[in-house]
Length: 107
Image (cartoon, rainbow, N blue to C red; front, side, top):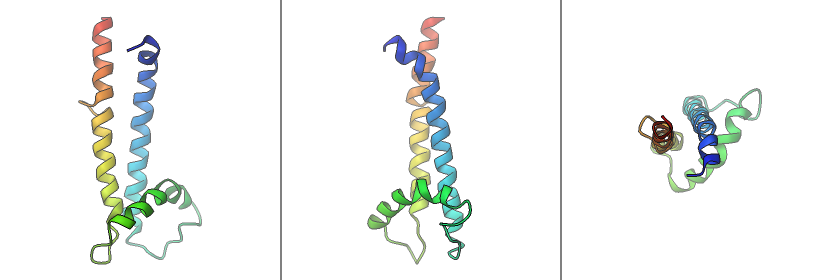
């Protein structure tokens, strides 16, 4: 791996971890909001939650129909994002292991 990539990797690692964590929180809020269908997602602070999640949920709803009248797509995405986050930036994640090995090589 080139030295420039190794220098940028800690920033990418932290940024990706924070981005995926924020997206998980947004989907968790969408799960809670399914209990309150009267909430208008276009008013107040709710567009901050709807904007990053609705395009993905709309595509997923075309594939996964509601189960018993309940939209389960946010639950699916929380699981997928959690898996993706663990595979990339978790303790045994790919980026974490590259960082660990590059630190051991320098020492």
